Length: 488
Image (cartoon, rainbow, N blue to C red; front, side, top):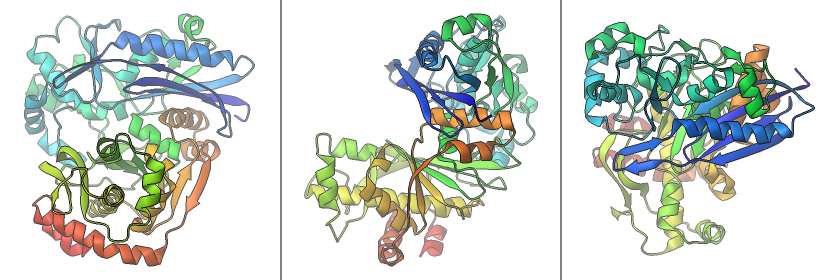
């Protein structure tokens, strides 16, 4: 394995990224291609042909640098809940309906009611943009006849690589209603909503060999014929693998436009609010619980579109009396609580860019840190293991002052990996599937940039503001008051 190269592909919303690393996680080559889509109200579509063609182009460029290297395998991640319809031969019959396409929103209640017992056991509720409501929308539109098949976004790429339709992975199938407890499609639920199981793909665990690169794909991409193609995971899970957060109680906190947490737990957490949902881990009998907030660094972009962020950070570091802030730009929160009516606030009023910019910047950054701490409290309340180290990734992890603030608010050490992109997570998955030791592959391929230790004196000093923040959320009716009692 020491001489093998591992390739990961990340099908993002705006681009496709391909990455090749050696057995020590050193990047040998990386390429990307831009993706475009169409938006129309609550509809968001992309052309599935572009997913394959642009991935093939990116791989063709990538492999030019790898001619003398032996490639061990390739895996692909994509956005969760993005689906399309194909024919039995894999031909595309619909556009790709993206992860945030909510045209089927009214049908989410039907999907929820039909499988409420199972969804409750799995610890989540059907959401408007999930894939099962989209399948019901296609049924309503009369699109499921004539041998139509549902496919998930990465299936387009893996089918292109092996030359025929392939199974989906259970990670991408979660939002289509796949039963992760019994590892099967829930026949009774499908019958209640009128879905023929023949429409749905076979499903395998992440890391399963789907096939080998065929001659046609080899000519198109430069990958050698016979290269193993492994079933991948969603981009959120891929980022967790890239962060190396694969031990029980370890967590990856991704702070980009929004804040998302994902960790490893021995048991399946149960959150009655539906804010937390869990994937099955690609290793052992573990679960990957987590959630995604609607808040995050997107508030910085919205409130300070043209600011010098380095100067703003330096000024914010000097602010001592930081006002309470919930850094939500739009309306509605989904994690660490579900509140459709939630709106951002600053001091006692709405979240707007008025007053001292440094004070507002400090308040937004501190508000995100408070949400992060509250998220871990809610995850623990749901039964997740939260005792391990935390890894910080995402674009905002480039701000060292913010990293230390988050570390101090949490009161635990945090790790900063060198290359946390999802494509690396797929290289880790391919290497771990090959060796039979995915955590071991993560230890070999994930390289840490730095570890931060919390200032525990500052942690204690910051805690009263955190408690006031939690109490304010309860006062607004967004958060269960029992949480306030425990957190206070």
